Amino acid sequence: MQTPVKKNQEVRVTVSDLSYEGMGVAKVDGYPLFVDNALPGEEVLIHVTKANKNYGFAFVKQFFQESPDRVAVSNRVYAQTGIAPLQHLAYPAQLKFKHNQIEQLFKKSHLDIKVLPTLAAPLQTGYRNKAQIPVREINGQLETGFYRRRSHTLIPIEDYYIQDPAIDHTVLVVRDLLRQYHVPAYDEAHNTGVIRHVMVRRGYYTHQTMVVLITRTRDLPHADEIVAGIRAALPEVSSIVLNVNPDATNVILGRRSRTLYGNDYLEDELLGSTFRISATSFYQVNPRQTENLYRLAVDAAGLTGKETVIDAYSGIGTISLTMARHAKHVYGVEVVPAAVADARVNAQINGIDNVTFELGKAEDVMQTWREHGLDADVLMVDPPRKGLASEFIDAVGVMLPAKVVYVSCNPATLARDIARLQDFGYHAEETQPVDMFPQTTHVESVTVLTRN
Image (cartoon, rainbow, N blue to C red):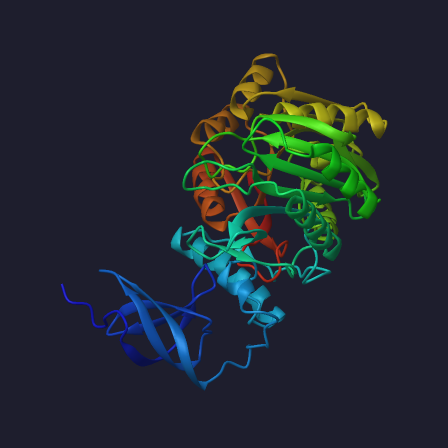
């Protein structure tokens, strides 16, 4: 079958929509083209870069009519790497885009749920408290940066725009030390070299900073000198960790870590509680908006102090401990051992004793709890992007809590899971989108489901 356009062809089009990846959508004789740096309503001349059977890709060569929602960009590299694919879209329009993303997915799934206006973030740039930066050799020099979209070609970057500027500075200090001591950068094609990634975490309130050096090899050459250099240049660094990942894989962190300096954790504060966060534990990356998200989740649960709550993806206990201040007892379950250890310590640090943390798969632990007579009034779920496993939803169908509070980072799996939960008599009236990741296409949301 012939496509109406061919690679390297130039054609004038009107952009009609924005894809979930933030690319403009234009159609030629019904054939969709995904256009980089294009917004709905714009009339543009495009250059086709790829023409697959069912869709193609293109970039803008010339603007004839620009969208009133277009704003000047700081640096095109942020879009090329996927760091900030929506930086050319005015912030109010970004919020509307995220609202529409959820609304359209609900319609496709035949879900009659009201989608509220997206909650804006306090900071639109410089908000991320964590960076995972790849390290590669380019033209004979070790570089840190980010991959070009849909590739593993590294683009050197010094200012990452959406990260805490103090983290950007830390990455540069570490990069320069690695150069100074001639540490070989990782070669992905041959699984050789030493340093793969530099990970930095920084406490928003405490300013404590953790540097994680991720290597292919068991040891880091000149480790003592590099640690001394980091400490001298960055007094806020309270933890330096070596993480070893020898495998030829896209997974960033390896299974083994050892602390080279300071603590094996950093501390930060959230809604009046102090949290210890280890290198491999999950912690939300936008701290100020996380507080708003968790307030929404606690309010949605409608806690009076009499409820038993299960937090099914409890991590280091951020939501569990927040809810424990308003509930009779909270039971947290998490599959990552380091996170469970952190959660138990965090409960002690904050003097919270009406919480229990268990290690294991939520669907298995919940079944055991149910067999031992535990009844939950509220189930809190904050799953990864893949959403809830079907086995987990079956476990919900056995336990049948009165209320499920679903914190989602993926509208597609949220819509799928709500449809599944309806089979057990649950329904939702509204969803509150929350912009945790300004300048990107990602959106979080809070949805309350109650049983008929």
